[in-house]
Image 1 (cartoon, rainbow, N blue to C red):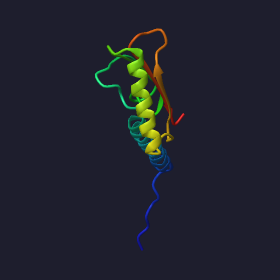
Image 2 (cartoon, rainbow, N blue to C red):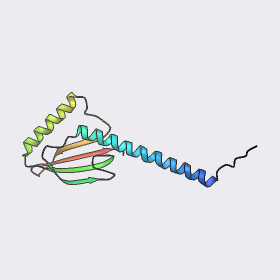
Image 3 (cartoon, one colour):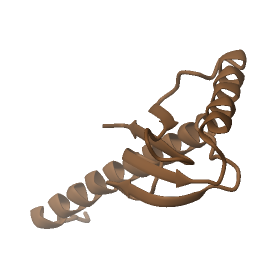
Image 4 (tube, rainbow, N blue to C red):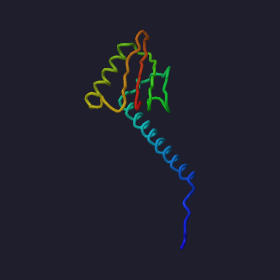
Length: 123
């Protein structure tokens, strides 16, 4: 008869801890990917605008967590508002106005040519 000794307890616990960590890391990375896809599909960047400020609290802007972007362009406030109205109407017609992430965007008050984008997802 052949007898097998079970692995030491520390090795079993280490394997369980590493497996748990990998599952959580995979979940967080997948959630970040889904958040990024949702936000970028519903919150389009203004054409030829330059990002002058970006603040995010996890891996990348417009992913999981909170993100604030400030964009600068040479266009006037009314042009920016008209562009945003058209994008919002497109989203409503396509029935994509709601999604996984909470998004807001608007013209920065008192700053000519500035847009503010804010999003949060998975928090």
